[in-house]
Image (spheres, rainbow, N blue to C red):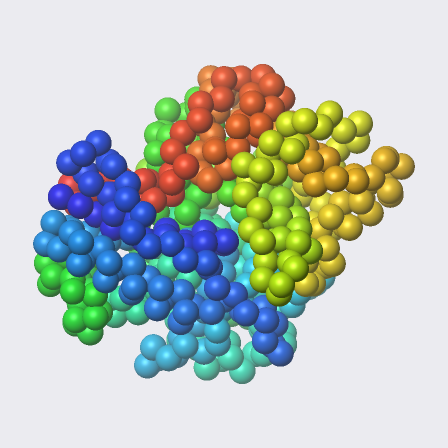
Length: 458
């Protein structure tokens, strides 16, 4: 039988068919950009556009594979969401996590609700301004009428699940990215929710990964050609946890899920809420296996992606951008020497888009100037600096993870789109000082299907 993974990354989405009878062979039947749009209200995800692309992908999949498709699951990036009213109407177009409305909101939460470390003790989540808890608090302060009129909270994959099936769920792995989930109880952090002034009705029962949700809506079946027997299953709907599912849960092998964001994680049975974990910016996220991942979110290939976008625009001669391949950029970087000073890839200077924060290359050189270092002159120098800085940060994170967890790691599984970056993989092994195993570049899609199969077996 075959299974469909709808895999949405922050830069692009894919509809992928997995053949469970042929060693889990993956076939990308449709790829599309993750569409965002800047409106007077801020940066939003064009979720209707993304939904339309998903339907196109499902049409292709069912036209090609028909009745051999048994199930569908969806995963996406974390933290972003929307609210619906009692009739299921969308209250607002989901905001992009890079939108500036959460600037300085964490500090307001720390002063008005609870100190930062107390918040970590409650939710186990790395303090980042983009976290759902800060997004919702910003909305509560600035648009309380939306909160009061809303009936239900839905993450990005949960909202798309609702549109596809008509069923509202709040899947466990994605719920744990919000900062509103209590990893010690496995339930919503009700006291925190009350303190923030958020209505409890927004948060329903948490759905475990692998749960069978139901069938596609009739009009979706009619549009896509899907059969009524196709099951929709709650995958590990945070893409990081779908990717991590492919590594297993031995507790001694870490993973590096490398895409727009880089996440280094380790499967554990219980959350780690120590002072050291808080101080070193670690997070605890529910895993598809039912346990927790001790992990750190790192800015990742976003910095390189924004540089690439900037250079493609600068290369435009006739009004159309000339695409630059990552292979071309890596080749240029390989001929450059290691820079004397590295950048802190998690510095907030690099969080915003080129449109909001200015050209990424200029921000990199500003950082270097502020640290009395020579600036980059060529594309190869910029790429070499970014890759060296990422690998160095990965190495330090592995050392911190071993100390905080008390686990001597055996190896690091390098998964996701960044696994194709040979320079980054090699430098990471050198910096981390442990064996790096390059894994599946479409790890999120593969893990998505693996959680579907686990659900069908249970």
